Length: 117
Figure 1: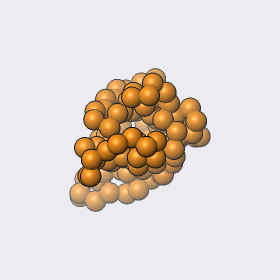
Figure 2 (figure 1 turned 45 degrees about the vertical axis):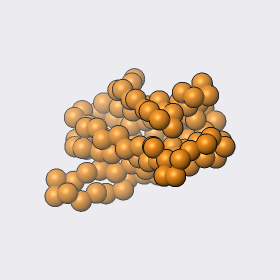
Figure 3 (figure 1 turned 120 degrees about the vertical axis):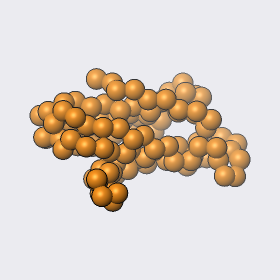
Figure 4 (figure 1 turned 180 degrees about the vertical axis):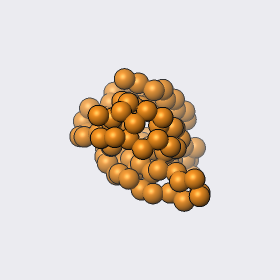
């Protein structure tokens, strides 16, 4: 059975990022988008459940992470508008039964990701 999961690490404070709003969309070949899931990270910086489970549909997807609101909520001084507000990560799913883990490591000024396990 396939699944898609994520987690967020706050690299400024060296801890999991709790309370980050996440949206998952499938990018259709005709240019439209279909929203598939919304979640908020828990105290461990993870969603309480995988964002997708079962047989995954191959294609292009986008995760959007609301890191600007997270860092503002911590009292971090940010410019208006913040350098990074919503961080989109566009990725592909090729294996319907695969486990895709797409983490985000973020600060108000930078981010990185990788395909985790």
